[in-house]
Length: 199
Image (cartoon, rainbow, N blue to C red):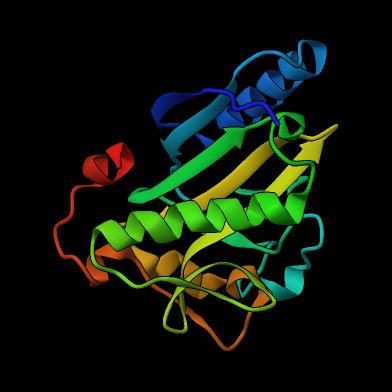
């Protein structure tokens, strides 16, 4: 296994579709040239709902015919989720052939990054067996959904920092009915989102 450097690109606030197109472009570049560096896209999205490959509209609480917001069905794994300002979204474009060709291993690595990041703020976060993502108690603080094409990843994770959680009330997040969502500022008030991005 060869250790490779990862480049970080902070895209700021960017519409979902634009970031999605950019990810596809980066993946295609790495399919054509597998020696390109891994890259981590850091960003925030304006309010948007996304559905994974296994999603059903049963987990939407709103009427699609009357919904005027943004909703995309994507090629990532997982169920429905919500993105909005105050939530850090991380899209690693990683060639797993340079690391480990195992998507379960990769998801556990993403979870570990979030767990270690939250530990900096004194928050004891955890995994819950059988469920992807990172939890504080019974509340999800970070959702994940990925796609890999010939072992090159796209999509990734979202960490709730200081976002308005009301958008989650319109869905059954990740299709899990008996769990809630939480955010970093519920434990560390006034933490600046830019500081969290740097960490």
